[in-house]
Length: 261
Ligand SMILES: C[S@@+](CC[C@H](N)C(=O)[O-])C[C@H]1O[C@@H](n2cnc3c(N)ncnc32)[C@H](O)[C@@H]1O
Image 1 (cartoon, helix red, strand yellow):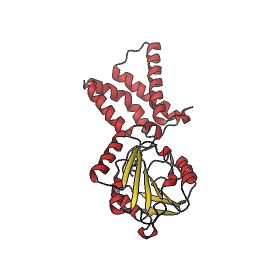
Image 2 (tube, rainbow, N blue to C red; image 1 turned 180 degrees about the vertical axis):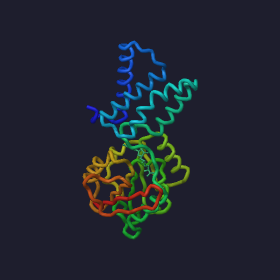
Image 3 (cartoon, rainbow, N blue to C red; image 1 turned 135 degrees about the horizontal axis):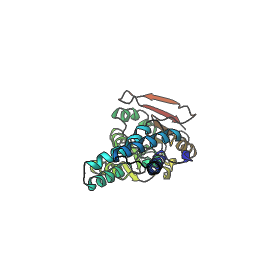
Image 4 (cartoon, rainbow, N blue to C red; image 1 turned 30 degrees about the horizontal axis):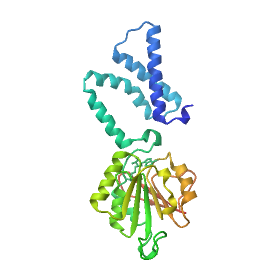
């Protein structure tokens, strides 16, 4: 049952189950634990259930410490408005990450520079533009703060650059960055990567997570034109060997995986 749910939803359901079971046990055995002891019992139970449900190991300390941390924070008497504000900011930045399992993290400048070498050469004229028009079209699927787009739009002004981003705050940030920076060959859309038709693009770039790669590959295969280029930063496509890999000497040792469609 849990396999079909996003891990964050499973984790929340297991926390609720742990509280219910702890309440029941306390009642049955006539115990009167302190709030912190009660929370520790909930945490232990939630972590054990999470292990049984097959959640990734890094969830276990979160599950163990969630309820005790809640009790300790309540003891600090922090105004509730603080938590609401923190929640709203996190919501605007991460939006549907609980479902997509693709959070915001940014590719490095070294990745941006490596991408320059994977764009069609200026002489080739690309596939979408035609003579005398911008030579190629590039999209960053999940464009974050727009760093990839604005860098490439400066470095290779003969291309047209598009981004699509679902999280409101990163979208707004990148939209302002593009408008205020005067990048006329660049735009970003608020929406889902699954709604874009990839047939329009000569180069499709994605830096997402392992979770959507299989589905994204199917979409790319179905929509991208022959001769165009699909690049995934870091995350492989199951059972698909890239035609080229570019090792980037950055902090994360990023790898660009390149497929020529
Ligand atoms: C790892 S970040 C990459 C940001 C940027 N491309 C870069 O390289 O710096 C992935 C981004 O994809 C966005 N994202 C995840 N799923 C998405 C979806 N289905 N549609 C649009 N954007 C999505 C996330 O909000 C996040 O900002």
